[in-house]
Amino acid sequence: MYSSAADIQTYLAQLPAPQQDAIQRLYQLAIDKLPPGFEPIMQYGMISFVVPLSLYPKGYHVRKDTPLPFLAIAAQKNYISVYHLVLYGDLESYNWFTNAYQERYGKPVDMGKSCLRFKKPSEIPYELLGELFTKWTPRHYIEIYERFLGERVVA
Image (tube, rainbow, N blue to C red; front, side, top):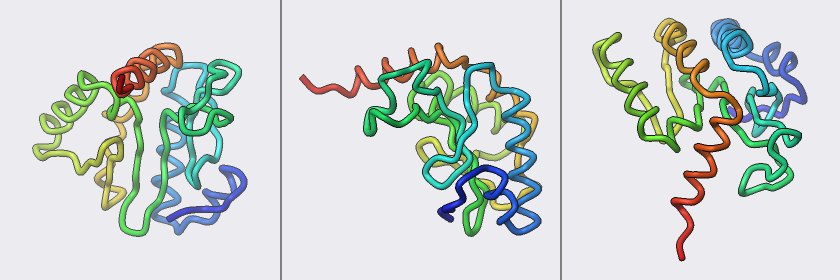
């Protein structure tokens, strides 16, 4: 569900109780585990952690005046979503996460390109997500992002 909330606290306050608890917990996990340099903002109707323009003035390739998205957390109609852009742009990271999830939970993760979907708040793998959140600094993510963009350039 897209939210027009202007800030994170308003977004959280507008959520129904079960989703609010899960999103609040994910938000706090990101605050606690992400390396310094990522900034929490509302972006695209979700709680997002971005590389601010002060660290990466080139911005997001589709919107140069927009901070580079890294992680987003949202309550959808039928699930909780966690978007982690490294999982889309870095095969090694994708393989690590999907294999770790399979090993720990005995089933494949419900996932789109970068979107992890959890139908029930009780299914959210907070410990594994905490590990995922610690793995990339803003600088490392910028390197992955620029490498990914370079691979997509058609001569």
